[in-house]
Image 1 (cartoon, one colour):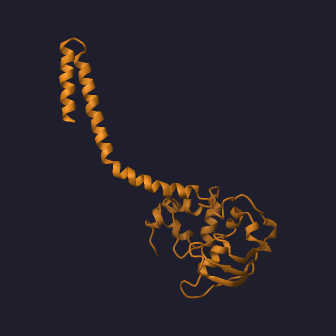
Image 2 (cartoon, one colour):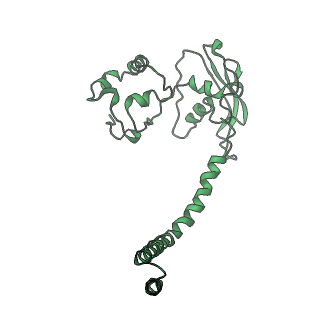
Image 3 (cartoon, rainbow, N blue to C red):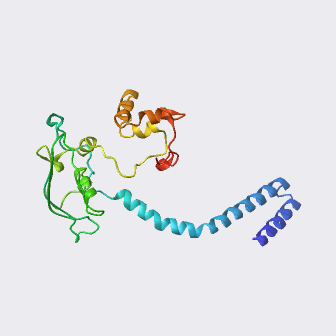
Length: 230
């Protein structure tokens, strides 16, 4: 590299001496050479990172190009607002997770949930209670049997509409970086202030939120790290 610098300066002086160029042009060429060689040197240092990125980007595109078995057509299917109240039934459901198809987690499982009723699924950890909820939300389809809402198989219903009928509160709340108001209205960006306050009052958290210095505009941080766990 230094030999190239030396040769450039020597040849530049030679051209200036014989009147073929000016000192300013030689300086420009020399600076271009220095900057170019510096950039090439940096690129050489990034070669290992580029190789790793090339390997990982394939996994990213595999995820982007993947066509899910459920949810590929969110706006298709039937909407049955007129059928409320909505009862839920699981009829002879047999299910295994796609990642472990040989392990049957539900066998001929039946459940009948009447509209307006309160139902508790009680069993030990890992007894597939959450699996039942995921089937009702249609995150998965059963291998055999049916999940029915008001006599309609979930597979026939509009998936976007179906999931709007379900409100789920997990053991560990999922919060996104942003304000409390934004998190509450996450599923409905057009929700009015009145609607937001209505749901917080029903959940008995309106008073707690109102007592915060910034109220509903309090920033919760990723996963709610800025809020007390209590």
